[in-house]
Amino acid sequence: MSREWAYRERSADLRTRAVPYSHLSVELGHLYMEDFAEGPERLRAHFAHVAPWAATAHALAGPKRRVSTCFLIDDYFTPFASPAEVVPTVLRAADQAGLRIDYLARESACAEVPGVETAALLLARLVPEPSVGSNGAHPPVEESGWLCNGERSPSDRAPEAMSAPAWQAPTELGARRHSVFLDAQLWSRDASGGRLWSCPFLAAVWQMLRLGLLRNEGEAVLPAQPWDENGFPDDWQELAPLVRLNSRAAPFCAYRTFSVLDSRFLPVEHAVRVILGHTAADPAAVRQVIERAGAEGVELSPALTERVLYAFTASGTLGGGA
Image (cartoon, rainbow, N blue to C red):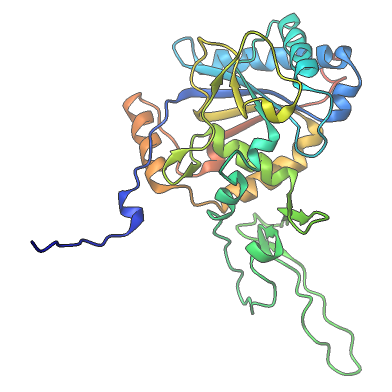
């Protein structure tokens, strides 16, 4: 009996798994190790300052809209204490401000989770826009680790003999009269030669995860795990990358994101928007979310940056703060 063999691309068998969506994902904070080192009072002040903005986000979303909240803990750059010590303190401080955290995420999950290099998934989706007149002297982003929003100031032109080199200003693509040029570092190298992802790049991954647009071979990268109410582990690696703290929470992924952040994060988020502006998301995932939103009467912009909203705050403003 003869046997016929059929050959096909492995990618042809992949299916992009759909994920459930909220209308809005509200980030209640992203603090560094030094913030936690200041003690519970610092956390209480943070959430007291965030609470009015979170309430405004819920009100603007509307009473019939699905809204979930999340909180990101930095265990990537400076692992500290333990989940058993930190997480209950965070939850108590949020509760005292009348806030409930639905999802808790570890920032290291934006770099990698077991079996998946999360950050590398986004890097593979970057499509830098070549500048006019580029001669290829600057290495591509996947080699250099730098991404800009325009044309860099040339530095590779040899000056003519006996003459000073002519300086040329960098320019922003799509600038309005004047340029706001940004060149963002996506990673550096650690002692072993591996990539140490930058805060802006991890924050861009975080936004893509919240938008539900990051996939690994069609599968969602960060499925939420239910909270074990017996407590939290003593080691960060034993804590799930994304924990659903509220069993009745709306979905983690959302059509739009809203982040309440200290003003010190503004430069970071400027870089995030540059990264998202150069990201070509999985087309199947994009189609799924637009169709899902459209069925609910929600019109989404094709530009990722238009789905990412912020409130930048600073303690001491608007009457003194906490």
